[in-house]
Length: 239
Figure 1 (tube, rainbow, N blue to C red):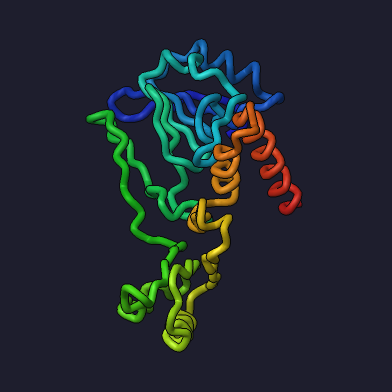
Figure 2 (cartoon, rainbow, N blue to C red):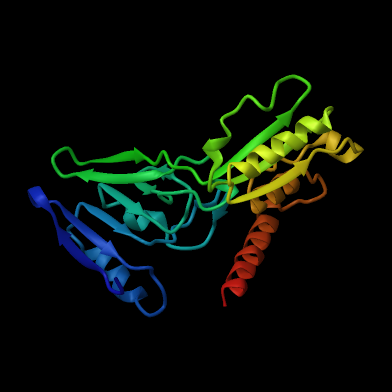
């Protein structure tokens, strides 16, 4: 939708449906929020204080206090499932990147009798992170067929038997994975202090590094700059 509107559902429950608020509809949207008699609001919102990416807060955007009148507010847009007070970001219904490996994904159904938003987990996964260690376990004792048409990242922790690793990789390719990448942990002095978690998304890895920088005084400001540059780079790739 491009303009706010109220939707009446069963049992007389009203939802205020909001568009992505921008310059062209800002005044209209704010007026609708202030004057609405709906119990609930739903939209594609940018609300300050919520995580746009896991570990990265969106410091700008709409003041959350503007929505305090509603029983609950449900929003899309930010991909992390999260709730603070009466505002919930529902997250994406499915995995999009390796950063989603540890995120709960699924669908939501609002019950107009109980007024409960039910979360229905999506059991289908697209991204998997496997840790390879042929010293302490047998890496061949997995069901390779599970990874057919999936995106798989292998983190090599210990590789003492190259021929087993070759069999392992051949089995994954034989299972017809959609994409396969390998990250080998090195024994350098740098990585022995802080090993990079390859299951994290790019921004989260950078944020972890910033958190460990004692010389950086305003870490949140630096994270914001990095996030803006990252979003800008993604936008330039789409055009």
